[in-house]
Amino acid sequence: MGSRLETCKESKHFKLKQVTEGVYAAISIGGTGSLSNAAIIDLGDETLVVDTFLSIEAGRDLQAAAVQLTGRPVSYVFNTHWHSDHTFGNQVFAPTAQIISTSQTREIMATVVKERVKQHLSEPAAIYQAIDEVREKMELETDDKLKKEREWEIGSDLAYMKTLPELELTLPAVTFEQQLTIHGSKRKVELISYGGGHTQSDAFAYLPEERIAVMGDLVLEGHHPVMRYANPQEWLQILDRVEALGVDTIVPGHGEVCTLEALHQVRHYLHDVTALVEQALQTGRSIEDIQVPEAYRGWYFTGDFPANLQRLYKLKST
Image 1 (cartoon, rainbow, N blue to C red):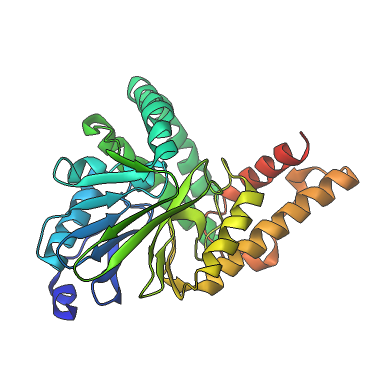
Image 2 (cartoon, rainbow, N blue to C red):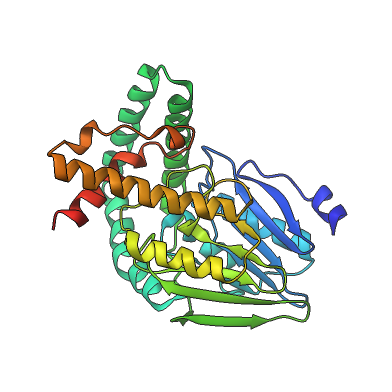
């Protein structure tokens, strides 16, 4: 299998990493049409892909890699949650692959996401204007890391706009509530949901024999957790339950393949940022004055830090 990885055609959207024999992480390359990570799992007689990227082009590259690595078409696609960078490549795999998610994830895709896509198609000028505003900020930015982040943001947004005209929102055909197990001839994969932490409904793929979890955005490595729709208390409880499974290796939603240390860091982040907001509420300090804590200044998705504070402020003050 190692030789297959070596001969696999490279993609500008992601780099492939072998996690163990027959399990591959597709790690996003910044500023392209992937935005998030994905995974390819060889079940022995069938193939499972976890998440499908932001753009159709990136999704096509993922499909091609899966076929090259396993020698067969993809049988199953699993969406960990509803965000576009994990689901908009779905159409590439349909109709031959069964697309799977939680019931609530499918419901949100069928309503909120469908409406959002419709709005974006009817008002593309507004998105291009927003891209121009980010470009202006990028040109004025003196911090190299923040400049790179804005550059990546523009690249991802342009990839999305390129995808939009040919996007066919492809909903999961198979849904579950708490757990669905896929039994292959080589290994089994448990698709598990403990509720919603990062979004209203999050799920992950767990390989019990290998102790590998493909976590979606419940765990990010070197990136600020994205909390716009988050329930931080539920998120923390979910992380506790994931740790209790005995996971050794994690494919995060963003960042490099990692260990439980990344889960611990997300847990610390949620505690730390919550404490900052609670302290601001107690002292009457504006959350706009809160700076990124030193421990997280090297992390990407810096632009999400103010939004995370706003989300927590809203939750704590209602």
